Length: 363
Image (cartoon, rainbow, N blue to C red; front, side, top):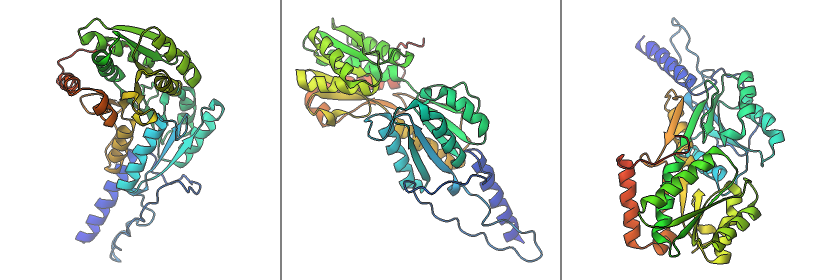
């Protein structure tokens, strides 16, 4: 009799936990997926005695059955958010055995809607990377598949029930500006932004504040490509900053910013990358990169779902919790003196302790 009660209680707890992280109805019929991680079959529940009420075993969905999808506006290999997302979910698959699939839209807005619909129909938790590319589509698809849990990466969504994941890019840009001012020899540093979006202006505000915080007379030259994808525009915009005397240039321009990094190698200035560690792309010319740990946030949320935790409506990643940082790699160690590295470390500690107020475009 005790075995019977224990079996019933265990099944009930698992089903209730699953509901916190997506659809647990079992109605979805996913197509075969060669890119998904395999999951281990759930162990059979112990058969009850003949005079007891039967407890479902094979039909009982467990936490191991939660399936995850990433819908990316770009594709794996973008040297940015999609690559980071892939790293995060691959690590989760290795650690937790989750089944997943990445849907790449290749920057084709005409397939956004159908792609999200396919993901929502077949998966329990859908990450939208980057969220603000899919605002209209999310509203429509959520009405069709309300039991799916949607995770909106890199911004706040007004869609009720969706989870917002934001990053304090102004804090990371502040560190980038501080570093740029410390190592500049010409007294001029550059900021190259991409599209005319609030999030990009937030980088600029943080960068300028960081340069000012260095307490010297370094000047900031800001230019925008006004395009998120064109690397050729990024290159010419960076060259214009260089011609103005900038010897360190921070790029916050998405794929267009890859042209800034190419210009650094071609013209002999130092660049600071963004989002992911881009130092390997132009070795010796990219002094560091401002990291947005999208990989960490995706891993964290999958872990919460696997643990049966109910997701909050919003998560914020910043310097204090390790979600924002500067890349400390071999190039950083080589190009930045120990004295200046120590100064950056001290600033990170001060920000973490709440001793530094960093302005934001959103203030």
